[in-house]
Length: 110
Length: 117
Image 1 (cartoon, rainbow over the protein chains, first blue to last red):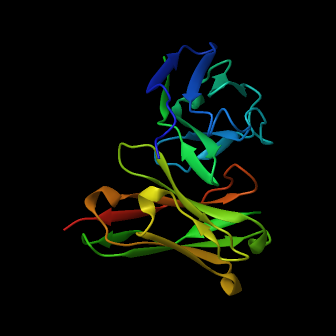
Image 2: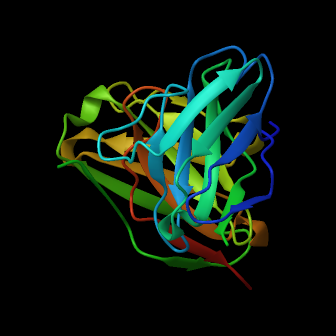
């Protein structure tokens, strides 16, 4: 069960926007609008940032947004802040009632 | 508020089994599936499967089939994840997490399982 593909690292300066991609197949990302994104700081618990491709839970900054095109989903962080420095993971529903995470992206604020 | 509280850290020998618990509170336990996810050192998040607390039905990815067993005790609103035939690469932090639908929120605090001879 192969993981979704994410870039290993993305960096940006404070105030800039960055985008993290998450590529799967028609059996997961491309076939369902069930992509979610999680932020994990070192030694902390993962936190839900986006669900159902583009929906934002209450309490999550509107600087975080999600989208999808074909088999690739994306997370955009606008107005980058120091506190955004963390690991980010996408996750998708996969046919057969399975789930699969992305390989993870380390975001660095320069 | 919704809380998931997991059992404490474990150290096991290769070939042994470990059973991690996750006690849920703050919502109706039987209405939402519980999933287990792990993160090994230097690795990413890995989905391990889910259990439906109302029925006990489970679903595991092929990688863990035959080695993982998820169960629940409705009387104490607790789910369990047992992993057998442990290897060194099973050393990881294991999380339980609730699935309102096709996403995970909240997460338990994590349980470190160390496999070492």
